[in-house]
Image (cartoon, rainbow, N blue to C red; front, top):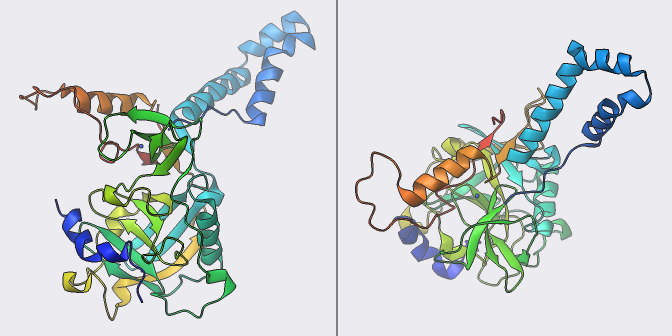
Length: 332
């Protein structure tokens, strides 16, 4: 039996689909060491030598690099390479950032399946326009302890690093971000959970809550927020949404399931980490970034010459629409 997002809602999902958490800035040990060495140089050499050293081009470059690195850290979350996976498809690569803080056991399972080539030559066999692209074996694999059912991880204890963006949300007491990943927040229950925004990656399951095992889906349409707190979310897409949008769609009358997927639906290969061997890094914008703050303010106040009717401003912020950006070249 196909594991759908919520089996009982499979016929409703496509209809519903039609109508970003500031981590505390962290400075690397190397950066701290360099700062100590730079600030304490006068204690180990003469004052005159220290003054000459500070004026040297090399010292200036080190100081400028430290300032730039700290600024980037304050405005961007650097995704650890171990939290990146890549899916290779007919149309290109899909790069995903995993977040163990949201569903640690599901993230661990996904990385293990990637490393064992479980998804290699499998398919995106259920693709519903405006909703999700679901991939995996369609339960055609031989059951094993490595592919057994997992205990649901729908919510997790609230992190002190979560940042609230909006308290006037339709589906949660508050919404915001955890290291750039959109989350719902309930401070009274000390809980947070990942939101079903475009690009969200989660495990599929049957109607019973503890039945996720190998199948996963990626939100490719508008946010199906009715699934929040009911699915185990593992991450978000960094690159490749345009790739997913090109996947063949399945017939609506069959809940989007493609009975005989073609090469165009295939997951040709999968990689734990970055497939790019050039040392490419990925970053997710913190909501404290000036660019995000500007976007958010415009969304609230409609302070733009395009808008004429502002009677209901300030408007609430939909964090699934105003998501934090991703980049391999962060800017200030």
